[in-house]
Length: 195
Image (cartoon, rainbow, N blue to C red):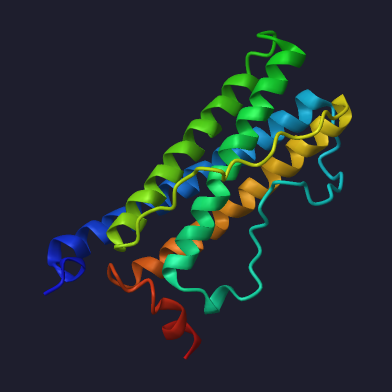
């Protein structure tokens, strides 16, 4: 019996998926609250349309049903690593703009950044269990963003938070699909779903 097929591995897989779903739901709720704070503090209109932002991975997947469980985990991990970098940039920009004067936005951004980092680590654990180690982060850092005007920074931040909220929803969906199957089945997951 392969290690990925043992009852303890199956229980761990189910536990990691369940905890991941709870983490993603909590993150989605917190990002929603942060979006409200961000729009208010930045003086933006909540209905403003923001074009795709460079470096922000899109949660939409054209062939989602055809992806394997492992591919879904890898896509999620790449996205959350990018969000970790983008949120850290936003936090730094916010501190430069407002210093410690805003007692609500800075801590809320920092809390979501911490959740994103924890979720990325959680995804790495799931990939290890799938017998597919997480890819290294070397060279995966997006290039430093060009110097943007204050308004452009605000719009980029809004775009980052909106897309992060979408990723949290997608992550729940991905983890639900993965939880239906045992550990090590991530390679065949897409094939099973498309039949």
